[in-house]
Length: 293
Image (cartoon, rainbow, N blue to C red; front, side, top):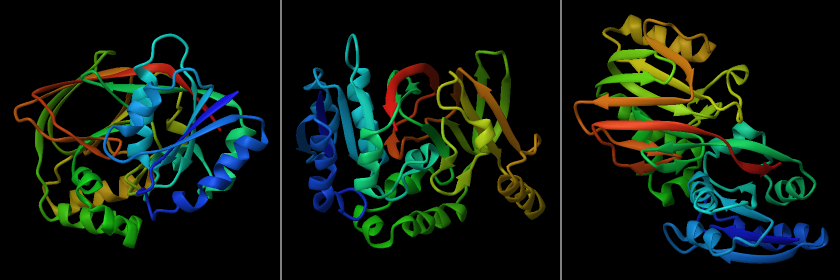
């Protein structure tokens, strides 16, 4: 058996460089032929994955952005894809939190070695793959605008600080969203997400009973622009209770959704900036990869 370990040494608080020998040791002890490769810049993880189609498993050690790149590499392969292992080492680790993965690198690696393969859905955003979320509006910019040095020093609190700045400058987007099931939603919204996760930027939690990683469906949440302090309070209460108000928060399940917007609003895919366009199509690719956990 062959394992490729792809590590982002800059992720989170730079703990991976210190832990990599223990992570690799788990796979060596289990009889794997192990290769360790470090990323040096954007898209390195995608290229390293694509260059190693003959391995049995690709183990990603990094944050949500790194795992996005690894999955993109897997999705670019033809035929049988290697399985995916994930050792979370980022700042918020939304994807890992949804999966219930250990945040202790050595333990996360041990769980992969002894784990079971689980199919998982992947998303397509106008043809670009993402792992767990595509979002626009409030709190979206904070995920990619927060400097890495600030993330390393303050951790998740850095995202909260950046998100607070966005609250004071809310910008509604006038959109039309249409699902493959025939649902049409129109209006002005300050936030929208198409996700396969229970944790959004560490700030919004979805009900675990509403989310399944391999059902072929995304969860779509759209939050309206509040017209007064009372409506803002209702939105906050709905998010905290996970009981969504149909008037202010739209929450639906779908396998495909098309957004139309008068302006080219920016998006984020798995925490990384993604330019938008007047029309955006998001598709669920059911059970596209196999995750070992």
